[in-house]
Amino acid sequence: MREKIEYLSIKSLLTLAKVMPRPLIYGLMKGISRSFYYIDRKRRELTVQNLSMAFPEKTDLQIVALSKEVYDALSRTVAEILLMYVGRLDIDAMISNKEEAIEKLQAIRKRSEHGIIVVTAHFSNWELAAHFLAKHGLPMLAIGREGNNKLIDRNITIPFREKYGNEAVSKDKAMLAMAKALKKGRNVGLLIDQKSGHLNSAKVDFFGHPAETTLSVAMLKAKFDPLVVPIFIAREEDGKYKMIIEEPIDYTAEEIAENEQKLVAMTQRYSDAIEKIVRAYPEQWFWMHNRWRR
Figure 1 (spheres, helix red, strand yellow):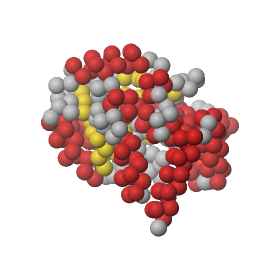
Figure 2 (figure 1 turned 30 degrees about the vertical axis):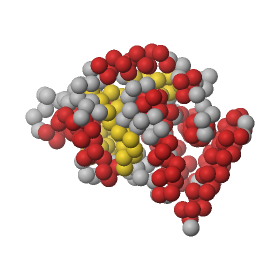
Figure 3 (figure 1 turned 180 degrees about the vertical axis):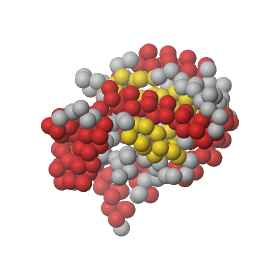
Figure 4 (figure 1 turned 45 degrees about the vertical axis):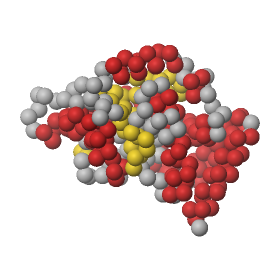
């Protein structure tokens, strides 16, 4: 019963998103987000604590102000995902450097004899980024956590994520699926910025603190030699987005003899790429997550 009520609630929200004025959608999502900021004390305090750990140089007032910006930025992402779902957001028009991004994607594809692993994070509108990449020639096997509500997952989330040719795969089936995809020269997308289980993971530095991080990317790089490309999308002041496509990370830690340590050193490079973008746009990362597992 609970699943069905949640599903019908989301369907109702999507129906509203089809007809509601866009400013009202943004305003409504911001209001809901701010309400959660004040109501959900545990999540708010975790956000503030995470920001304080990452930016010890900031004052308490600055941290609190930034925490509110984090919630506001997330509200914009949710509003735009709703608009994307109902076909009211022009993905290409939202990318300020569209032509440059497409040129970079074409250049990367020419070098991708063994497939591509896109390393990214729960940063800004990561769903829009995945849609844009697939639409312009880089469809991926997209790895994600299976939703708690199977009705929403099966009827809303997965069809949305697969709209332009991406293939959604749950984490519990991920390693075999990624290996098969890369063997065929296909592409894989991984968000590696959240805490990982102890299996195939290790603690690497993230904002000066040890954070449990999956070793999957490094393991796949070592076995199949795909291009590992950090790709992010950053919201700019005018509301549009800049697609940030970094150079492939070719590092394979050849100077280290022990295999496990090789994987850890490689994973540190991927974590560093995420930290770099989060430092540049701190309000756009998902700080509500218990990244340092306390």
